[in-house]
Length: 229
Image 1 (cartoon, rainbow, N blue to C red):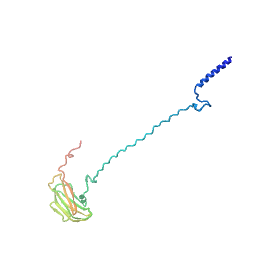
Image 2: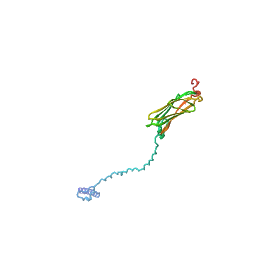
Image 3: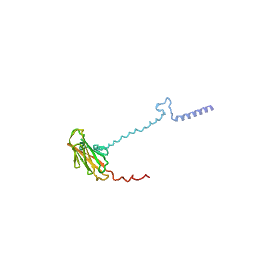
Image 4: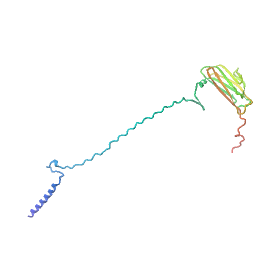
């Protein structure tokens, strides 16, 4: 009798366990159950990484190009000799046909001294110069002296005139004459003698020679000053 009761208790416990198991959902169905009633565990897929869309590069803004200012028209360059600037003109170009020079010796003079002048003209043109005339005008501080060359030339008051009918290309004419410093010329005076040459079809060319009288006395600076202290 006890065996029967024990067996019945086992059966009762087994029935309770089976009933409890039947009430819970099965993770995996038995082989003979329907496919639709199966519960299959699935993995939740990870969302793909979000990449921000590429940012379009900003287009450069077309700015209007500045309008170039018109360049001013520059004047023609001028030639420079020493400290004097000159622009070639028809007159100076015509004067290039002849060179004229006037030289005085000595250049340091005093009352009564004889100054010897040498006047030279050279034809620099490609053609002969005709009716050439050399003129020398003495200032009031000088008195006419002897004319050494050329022959036949002489003074007309204080003006010396030398005439040449023709001067070929490259040829030259020279006049040498003397002048005496007047007795009343003051000390420190600078004496200027003027000469010019003219020819047919040529603009006149001029030249100047300077001589100077010494000062009346030396400057006070440096005279009897004694040694510097």
